[in-house]
Length: 249
Image (cartoon, rainbow, N blue to C red; front, side, top):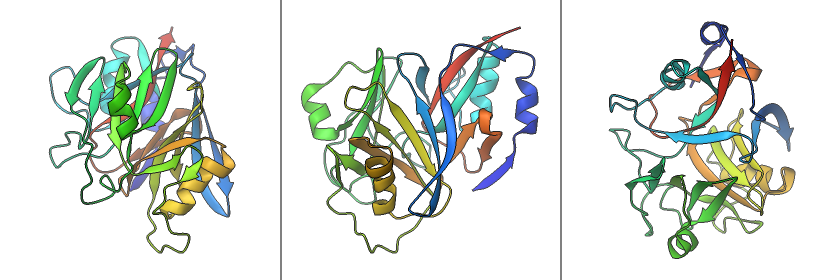
């Protein structure tokens, strides 16, 4: 992953001042490992998923989304890659954008991290957002305005995924999302050091005290956090999750 200076992108948004978003990002450490966490309040923040641009092409980069928003007098206040994707950058699992289902729920096990059951769905609804285990989601079918399926689950009802090993040697930069029981607290986390699944799950459970958390991806993990002067560059992405805020002159 390449991390570039945010100066050029900051210049693009310098013509306006953002208002109305409560998203906040911070650098933090836990058990000697470095992370960046962004806190989102779905009651206040305009939290969305992004896949295709106005012409039907995949956005792929944070800057492409921001350019479209600029034309609407808005900006991307926070963003992160939002789930696993195929070579054509289509979502691997269930995906809903602005109420329209793009990809169905995938309930069965399979190869790779996505198929390491249980996996889950991140569901954005009116005034709340939740990480929900996939079979529970399929049974309840909540009315999500946006949804993305990924896996594995990191934390399930306050417990780490049963297949995570404390002595694992598989370390990557990883990113994920955790939610509170009432769906009003959403925290997106990216590791700034290579971490195991067990270590990554523990920051959500033991440090952030969130009962549900979902792995979004690893190795391609990237963060857009203007307030930290950070906007990561790297491989082209599939689904992207982000917060939109309006600009004022």
